[in-house]
Image (cartoon, rainbow, N blue to C red; front, side, top):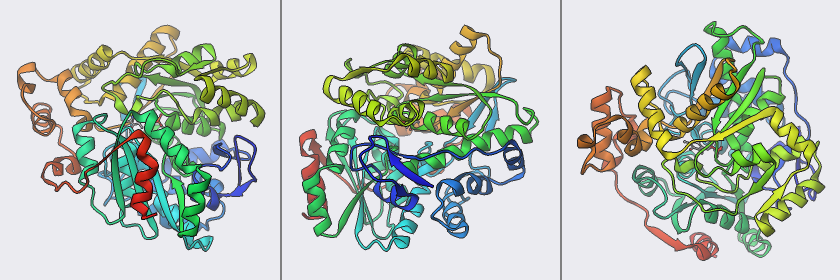
Length: 499
Ligand SMILES: *Cc1c(COP(=O)(O)O)cnc(C)c1O
């Protein structure tokens, strides 16, 4: 399979090069030239397969430069019982007759980012060997909290790579910060930026496409790549678990083969829900994709009106991994929906970077509305959803997942559609335990406790065990202390690389 840039000013390239490059030099994102459709027989057969076998079926056509054996090795190294705490890798939990929670947080950092970031380093190392790449790959990451840790963990001590992570200073939870500043490994550099996630992401995009810096890097034997969901290698592993969930639902006789389902995704950068869109394009029977936002509801407005407008206050919410005003992967969706019209994409993205807003044409608007339904969830409702879900089902969910579930309820209410629905559960409740505790514990149990003490309290009161990696975190040594201004990100990169 070959890949092209959404901006139309770069040659088509092979999958190994897509994985290596991360972002297209013309500022666009790589997408497959065309999508393969699986027939329903293949999907049905997946119900008898393991997660790794399902991953092979989905990844093979997209990563066609890799041999079957190479891919298998990457998959097995990523999704195994050393890294994940359940053999199913992404188990589906039936909440009631219509709602099915797809638990994507059983990996080493307790959020769904592990699903991609455990396999991306494997794919990258293979890509380097296969293309005879001698340069050291420098992975640049902007994170609102979860991607950073997952990238540091996925790439730690991976030969021929160095990973630099920028996260918003005071903009991540205590647990997320501890996860990053205690990171072990000899090639890992977490750096706090005095700004928000959008500042960090814009800074990283600028560094990645900085011609002069890239030239210096080249001369010194370095080459940039990205582990953000702008990298196709992040997206394609995420397509797998939607098929896997569907296959599990067939296996458990919750649905008939071929039966349509809805998929609800708590959304920030539009990566996870875009993977669901690609699954749908590949033939997964999906009725509606339900896009759930928190109070940073740019996408809700976009899906409902066709106007994308980032000119609004940035809100810090209790679902920080979705505190985003520029959802990068939307560019890929628009490219697909306009039948690969890079002229339109350039026009819209130009307006977005120039004025902070753009409006899509009516034809594209109606396509968006046909596929997606969108709403958002307030802070108050996020807590209420966690609390209600715990009371009603004894099932604990994190703040991001609560946003998803709340918006699904709104969809159900508004449309009366009772199609069975997969809700992406994107983080362990213990990862955002401060808010989760506020929702399910008494004020007296919380008062005066830090996030680590709350872990114990939450676990004690709910009898749900704390994931091991979070339990052991408080005793780890702090190894990283870098802080910088948002104007100094490039300088920091140069310092890390000794340029
Ligand atoms: C990253 C993240 C999201 C948002 O996913 P996108 O792919 O950026 O839309 C939602 N929930 C959690 C827990 C996350 O870490």
